[in-house]
Length: 191
Image (cartoon, rainbow, N blue to C red; front, side):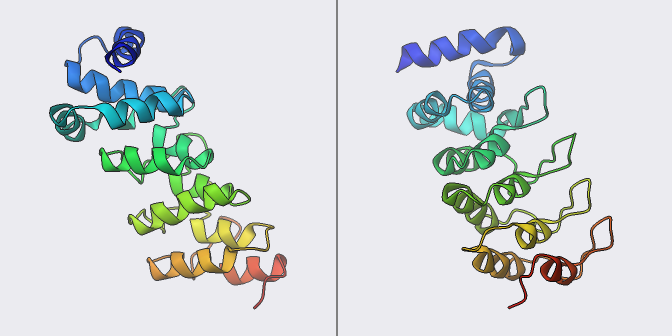
């Protein structure tokens, strides 16, 4: 265990040379998650000492992003990694950060990938942890718009209900002026 932690820290150290050891560990966990090494990130998160967990929670180090602006939490939402999303959030990762290109949050990413049951579970988890359901991406789409716009048949109604229950604006308009009613008609999802 210590070898893996030391290896990850050594690999991340040049990027964050001015950080304390515990802050560096947190940044390395996030960088490892963003790089796609879920197993290593989870291993480190599960084996940190209590002091390391406290230090990681106090620093904004789990929100480090890759060159595309994606954080570890966003990456876990894209890939349906519920256990990683849960671990990152519990250690202090921010739910509502926005990627610089498309202006999506982790919740947008999870809903965009709703074809996957595991991504649906990540989306449900993020909503239950009070991710902002009203944030819009660069197209003016909220997570509710994205849910209505999916072309899947299963579980979208439960997701719509959960989003509305947690504060989604049913009258929000996209940049094209579409509300969820317009999208439901277009997608033939009137129930």
